[in-house]
Image (cartoon, rainbow, N blue to C red; front, side, top):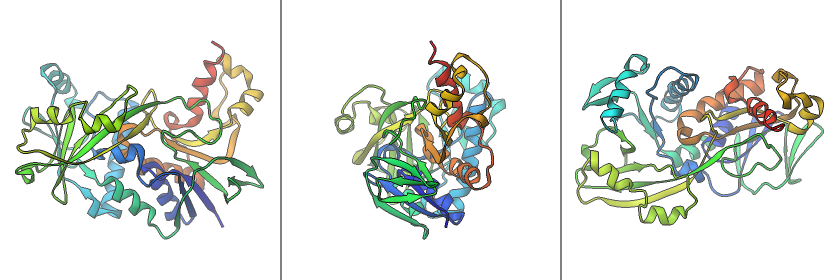
Length: 361
């Protein structure tokens, strides 16, 4: 029986577990805290395109967005709110910048209120989505803090308690339970609010202008989110709205008698080029033992690297985790079960190569 263990029950882990279960694998998800904790909990979960010049990142993002919107509509339509998004410029300089990108916009749009309205954009319910993904009949969820991983007889063993043929690390900002020094990332904190205000039902679509407002079901509006790079107490920052989410939202959408119902907070993991990390984990020590000249810039094909057999990564989704996760999980499923290639910018091998070359400096 093909089996898999996924460590982490945020959106990356939940989407991966769902895809592998859909493919017929029995999946055990281990989570040390709670489902949809950390960065997944604090996410606004907005599903919207990127306005920019053409780039590899934009192509990847918009491909993931189209897939994710279709995925949510097919599997979890009640959790998807597709009211559209109005993207407003920050100022005249930003307005001119966005206008220069108009020829490159590759999602349906229309000009509205000096901004750009995307009718197909939407929002998803984070916590309910993660739990719905994990409710698949082939998935079991256990609360467990992973301490040690060992590989014996073609099986990954977690703390001498659980074992499986495949293991996926979807640990978010938590440290991986084995050394992967090439995963250099940054942690960015965030908080968001559920709010209510007079006539909140008149908000019929998402609005983004530095921060985002979105009407969701159950008569609540989501206001988010911050990108905090400094080390602070996130709970205290959210309690006092240190980063002025409410004040900034009031500028473009005045709200009377606003009341904060609840706040969510957590840390997101970003790479320095913003591409997530998806694919088979490189054994850095073993690879450099065989190919030490990688450090000095020698080109060694990824296929010749040494990998941890059956060990995969799905992490560092940044601020667009609910856009990226379903598409990444689909790519990972096809790679694990059918050996289909994953785009190079996402691969752990690409991170390893850049890291190894800097070791000689």
